[in-house]
Length: 342
Ligand SMILES: [Fe+2]
Ligand SMILES: [Fe+2]
Image (cartoon, rainbow, N blue to C red; front, side, top):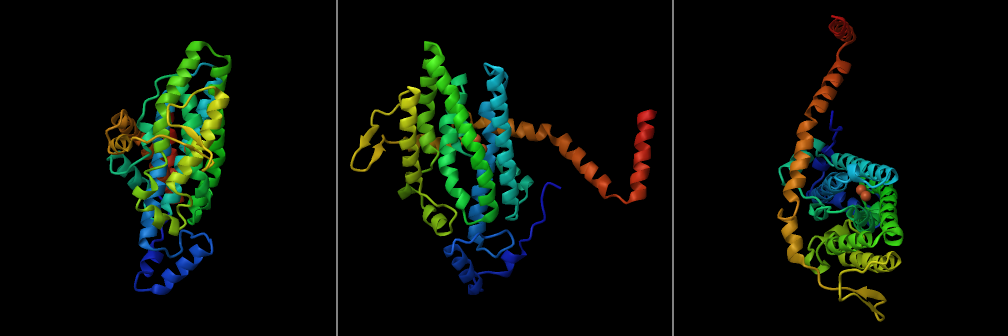
């Protein structure tokens, strides 16, 4: 019951031996048409999408952890309600995305098993700790801000179920970004010197990992060209990163925080902000499993999965009962009543 019906026979019908299918697929991509779940698609297209959508879903789920830590510690009722809503949104994003990935032929149980065993990746940003309340605002402003930059182009992705899921997700991400900025602005404009320092410290720690969220530089990202050809990727990593930096510099000025990069300069010729070198060794170390919180995050997800076993068992038992023929159901119902009244 945790999977939906999957028709992969269309994929098996077509193959390299059937160039007509490939030609029609290419023509539809070129025309900007959506590819739907039951359409023929090349095996590598399906595999690439599955990897990307499941990683994206895992990121939404793991992404609840750093901020969830602060729900019980929020400074006011208003901030607590906002944070609760945001974290619940992220759970919803994960669910839309797991459902979109299931249309490609992999069950949610399979995807979660890959996450829990460490085989599947999620965004490395969530392996950093949230040390103060200002981290929550900074995640909203910068992490959700970077996510929006990354995700808006995916609303035009060639795979229909993914593109449609992203439209709804992006609307909610923009609320996430604004609530983070608002929380930081409140501390910077109306807060104490200690609160302003707390915000600056959080921005100093999150800035560089946020720039890494866009992935390796274009010349070290060998799969990007194929992703662009398939209409899965619409804008390159470096281009998205530059757009993010240009927007963040202006927003940082409004906030009154500095960005921790001495090489940040306006480039009149390029009409963009130049920025310093990113420490890619750190990025690969965190992606490889050796970041500050990798083990803690994975352990928390595995524990949540194990603790939720009774919910899955109860749901399956209920589904079996619903599917049982009517007389058996009546009899079961009677037994239940006698148990309750006994
Ligand atoms: Fe999200
Ligand atoms: Fe978000």
